[in-house]
Length: 433
Image 1 (cartoon, helix red, strand yellow):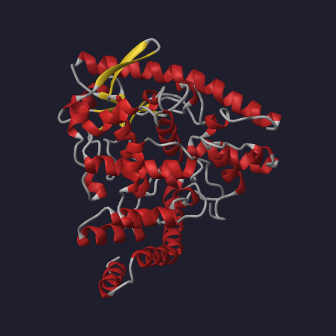
Image 2 (cartoon, one colour):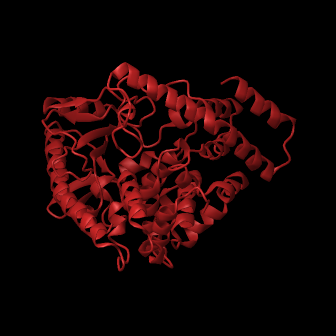
Image 3 (cartoon, helix red, strand yellow):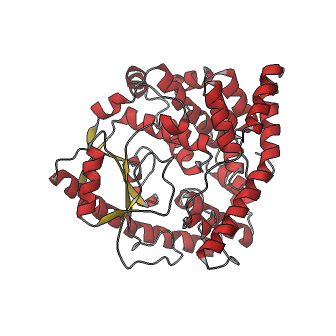
């Protein structure tokens, strides 16, 4: 790993290895490093993975905090079930078809216990006109769309909330915190990623009913669930969104199913070549970060990734993790390697290097930092606070720009000797920002 990844995070990754797990580094952390690690885990939704590693030598206060978090989340799981059942009743009474994604559906293949996974919303996929019917049905039982976030790049309608008297008390596992609902209109957003992934239509046709304890729900079949979660990880990877929890859960699935020849035969049968290749990008980062075993089919797809993508992993495999502490935009070079059109490449490069759009005035990002903590020292007045936020984001983009271009040049040069066309492309992209 790079020096920009803190010691405590390296210790966590070492402890989470699916082969050769080592918790000794965690045992050697100081109290301040533990506090830093716990804050990171809350932000990255990795808290409960700490409960699943060898905890001998952990400070008592750390174990007490983790156990308190787990107790809160156990009660929160009951709220998640109740919220889903109420939403399901409203949709089914209007004969609206849907599929539940993420959240508790990841049990048992991706998480060992649904009570040991933080869930903040209910994610539903509703194809075609069903999504508008679902929106109306949820509105009828008191849900309303959020207005403070820019959803132009989202794969779902504006997140739907419910009125209530709950207030934030600093506990991300608060059992009383209500869950929102997100209605997804696509499984892959070609409009925002600028490239398509074929073969997704069959996911809806192969949906199944699943059971979890005392309730049932519609979900993707096992091979399609893997496909969706891998594509979801890839989507967040090329957008520069934190992916640590998704990558670990994917690694756990791959590790558990490495010798399941029947599963991988069905996977190959249902998923065509390009779809398998896109998933293998997420498989590759899962194997690199957490040392999971992979089936011959999954490994074969990884081995057949293009030289440009292989070189990106060689140069930047830990960049997404590093970016959570020291910002970088190395993900843009992976994104470019997935595009065929020069015009699309210039669009993505220009958008990532210097975004033309900023979040709306009352964005929560102006109130909270990346760890979800209230910003300290910033003015309370909304317009002035937004000005602070705008300036801070502008400084961020200016600071990251030189290293991004330098890393891109190195990545390009590692594949070939840069020629005239590269310099024209890079210069044009820069001056069109």
